[in-house]
Image (cartoon, rainbow, N blue to C red; front, side, top):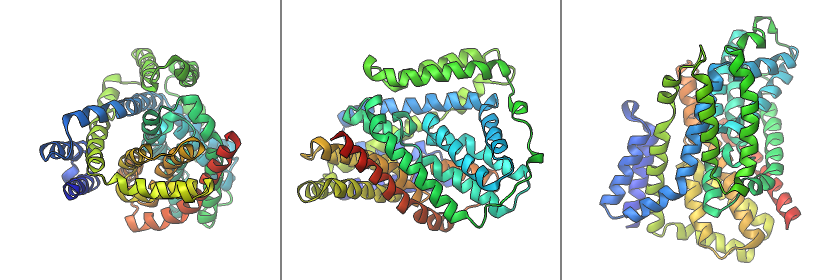
Length: 431
């Protein structure tokens, strides 16, 4: 059973990454899930249990992407990026820093996938319009891709991984945010430092911004642009109220997406039919299918290996050791087998241990941090990275896997350590 489960998982993941002849990522995941059912690795009861865990996360992601696509159509993100560029006043280093900070905000509110799909093309178009050296272009797009994941920690909705873990362990929006505010600040600060250190020779001192258009000119629908601000404010308030109202975050997001969609019907620039068609429905299929495959690993008792390791840390380790150890273990597994199955695999192992109190919190949140940041080590680590590479490939920016790995491991390992220390400080404060 163990080998059958592992081989099904390995074959499924290989096809998801390889995507032969442009095969959608949903088909291998569904194929793997069906094969797991046929071979008896999982049962229909398992499928029902998996669906109950991941439906909120997957539909939340679809809703956020629909909102993001509408905002992109009206020029919202381009307007923000142009403002950041103007704010730098031609200073290349400040422009680099503001690009990273913009990516931080977009990832926090619109998920890391939103940053990969929407902000990266905008940043790329801007640096190309400025006719910058290819090394400079690479520095900016690598920074936007890196920060997409490393800043996707603060809210439950910032990453699909966060939602899955919060739902599995019954963590509310406000509670989650209270534990992740400081680690996010540590992560963003470390990301800024590492990105500047790594790309310091590529970032120009001065940039001529004359080629960029005015932020006002980026707005393609002023009415909907003005309406977006109160809707987004209500959306953020709804996130924090969701815990007390006992309402899944996907319902809050669906309500905001519906309001945006109704408002956009009369917009001359937004084609709602095309946006709904382009929404990542395949992610719903992919998520459920992939998690069913991972559940097969759980049924085959492979999670017991992680459970025994974690149990040993609980007995013999300190809070700092448990935090760092769990985080790096999740990061390693995420970089090797993608963060979506990893966070579930690890959550199942944590849930079966006897950990409680602050030690349990350390494992739960360190698992999230490792699954959010660890994927930056390899190109296969997260769906956001795969989407990011796909977007860049369509824009004729080629980044080899070897080039990505060399950059990713240098940037990620120290950033992850700093972020986990931020979590440790937070947990000591609440303990």
